[in-house]
Image (cartoon, rainbow, N blue to C red):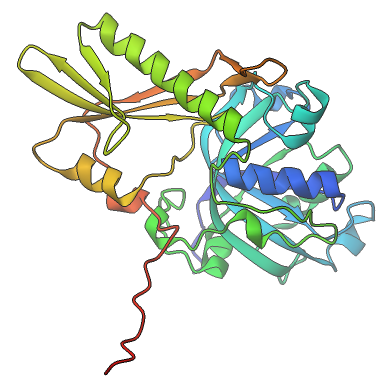
Length: 325
């Protein structure tokens, strides 16, 4: 008897091949965020577990032709659900100084899958595949579908629990970076990894603004706050109590943050009490000098200790061969 696999909710998205679309895809992967031009009624109470962004196949064909094609699929875990963004986040939003994709959600890269059949020989249901095609004819608006995740996860080599496929261990998924985007009109731009903001003035404004919000928060609670920077951002004291705070800021979604090995080790040290204070969706006006940050959404994690399954290595230390031996 064939077992019936549990279905999960997916957001299916088609990403075009234009330079602008490919640049936004890279930026979305870097900053762990995706967005749409408008809010659809079906997004209101939706809580998708996965997202698939497809590129490389033309959607303006009949379904039977689409199902004979292949595409590159970027598989993500969706984090935090839909929200209405307020910051200029994507490159074309910055260039035009206006919100173009206000309906947003956080995305955690799980796997990049190349040359995936869009028909019955592939990992998608016909409904799921057609949803990507329809997205491509509707300005890249996400289409919500229910379908089993197991074939995609198996193809990606990601272990999963059949009863809870959405509980993907980050440390056992291959992931991918923006450098792996291979569109026909791939923009030639240097990249630096997940969450990186290339404008140093903007990056500094975001970091300082997030630390300012965190400082105000803890001072209101009666703490004396000292700014350190390393091995953690803020040292808070209140009487005999001592608390260390790691602060992160982003214009994107509250999906993941970059941590150094020292930050991880410090948070795991049993003698330390550490909080993680994250400010997402920060709005930055780059027309002023200095830049003016504002707004933002706070995610506050008290007594924080990063678990192994929520960490994924981004860099390696390579020991050179001993040539003297």
